Image 1 (cartoon, helix red, strand yellow):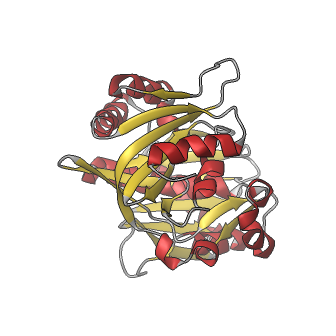
Image 2: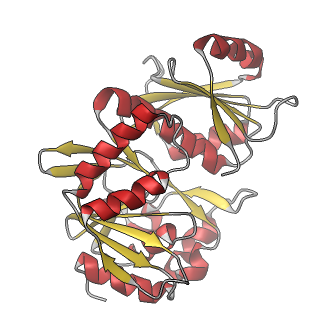
Length: 315
């Protein structure tokens, strides 16, 4: 990660609010899985991408969390301050919208985690033949590649390609999406040509990313608000490991998740209390799902066939 989160007191939050208040030209509240998250910024490109990413929330509702996106010559690039008491984050000199979006989701996740027993999962969530399949893994492991690869199949629907929220209902884990649109890479069509039209019509930023309406390709009916998780697949890319597919026990999978900070570099608070909450949730989640690990050192098509077989799809 190119940024680190520095926790601050509510008193310091007040100081920063006064310091950056004159930069705020735009204020908008968005609905992130039932949380009203307020963006405050003077940067119109950030505002426009934000409004493309998230559902609109009533502006008369008080916000659950606030996200300032501002500039400050005296601060280092990619500085993040966060006050957990007031749920207020200051993103200073951040030029990559993907981090802004992820930190907004993390801010909502902090509210949901503390008060509603709902947890963030940094991964893709698909519905395959009525059953939820989750893909998680470190950067470069192929989550995005294989999410969109699976979406070439008409029997696959998508809840989220990057981040979803999950909660326990009895013996089930319900997974919920929260974003209106999807944030894709410019090289998506290089791997899967079925998305070439979407890529051609997209407006990419300097980082080679664009917010797009995936409904243009897969249709409205294949974007789902929720599913019930059945299978968790951990992706890794390790050329020193000759193995490809491994079935995991819950305890072994939990160790992988804990050792890798749940594959989520955007969590705002990482104290022992928070770790214990997350560990307990993922332990419960893993006890209710089938778990596999796939080494993605093969070609995308080779890995796709393995995932499809696990999910019960015909190649």
